[in-house]
Length: 294
Image (cartoon, rainbow, N blue to C red; front, side, top):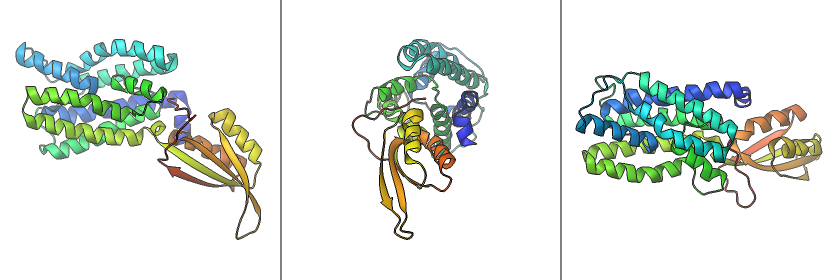
C-alpha cells in the first residue's frame, strides 16, 4: 500500500492534500484557540492578523484571515520553487499551498479551547501538524513557506534539514512574540513548534539516510544494475559464505534515503524472494551523495 502510494503521482498528490488538511485542522482546533503562534511564514501571517485585529480594530469572525495572507505571501516563494526545484515540484507546491490556505480558512476556530491545558494542546497540535507536514514532504510535495527554502538548501547539500532551518527562522519570530505579547504565549508557541519540527524531521523520509545490506543468492549484477539505473544510487557488492550452510552468498551495500527503501525492497523481492535485507537508519553520509526531493 505504501509502495503504491509513494510511487503513483496522483495518489501522492491526494495524500499530500490530506496531509495539509491534518496540519490545518490541528492548527485551528488546538493552537489558534489558545492564541498561540505557528512558526515560519504562517506564524508571520498570524502575527500580522493579530496586529490588524488589535490595532486596526478589524474583526474576521470565526474564520482566520491568516490563511489568505499565507497564500499571498507565498507568491514570491512559489516563484523561487519554480526556479530552483523544477516545474513538477513547483506545481505540486502551488496545489498544496492553495489546499492549506483553503482548509485553514474554512475550518472554524472553536470559541472555547478544546484542550485548556496549554502543554497538552501544544503536544497534540505539534504531533498532528508534524505528521501532516511530514506526509506532504514525503509525498514529494511542499506546503510552501519555509519548506521551499529548506528544500532548496537540502538540494544544494546544506547541513540544514527542513526542520532545522524552520527552527532557526523561528527564533527571530518568537523573539518578536516575546516582545509584543505575554511571555507565556511565546514560550508555549516555542514548545508547539519544537514538537512539530521533531515529528516533521522524522516523517520527512528524504532527510533520513540509511545503509542497506542485501544478502542474495540471485543475480547480483541484475540487482546492482537496477539500483544504479532506477534509483540512481551507487552499489558495492562482494561474495561471502553462509556460516551455517557453507553456501556462497552475494552481499550488496547501498546508501540511500529512507524514502527509497520501499522501492528497493520491492525490487529485491521481485528478483530474489528469499533475499535477506537489513537496514541501518540514521547513518551519516559524506562525499558524493545526492539528496532527492521527489
